[in-house]
Length: 203
Image (cartoon, rainbow, N blue to C red; front, side, top):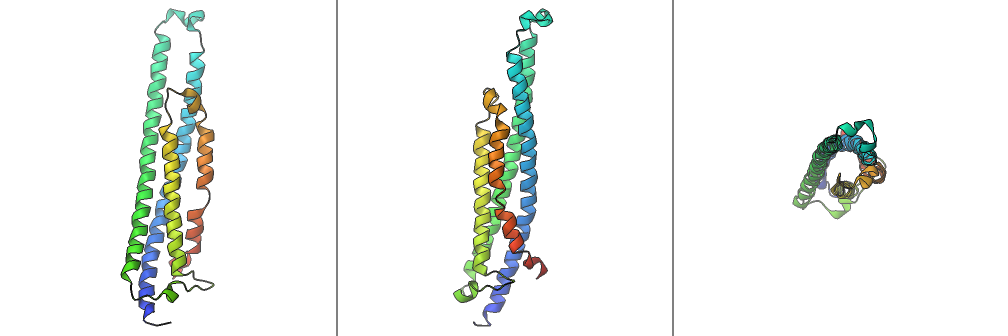
């Protein structure tokens, strides 16, 4: 293997190190945002339960019959609360989108860097050792991580697009639907890749 490849390989490793470090920071934001969504969806589900319960109350047969405007005012306040929660969720979706887009930019920059290193032979790119994965391995992991963010983001977006306070039954079951999304997000694609390249931090 030509020793001339070593400077090129070192340059690419530095680029990969920078990329994986950035992705690790982005992933913390990603996890925190998903946790915030869990809390908001739980609140939305509880609110839907309250709204369904209030719809079943015959106010005319209660001491509250002297307040004919009460049901409408209550419904209005509940809808405002639901819209506020939905607005917060839209903000969280934007945060997830930013992470997804940032991951795409970081990964694209590494591949662009690779395209510019024409002097690197294929044999060197596929060489791995017990302590160090090959360049090809790491590039594949980057693609897996990027695909992970795209996939989970779309799942979250599709779920939130279906949410409306006009369909209280579906709103009430949001935590169960959200749990399925979280199960997919716990596949540890990102964590596994970051663990495998942790040697870069020490290098």
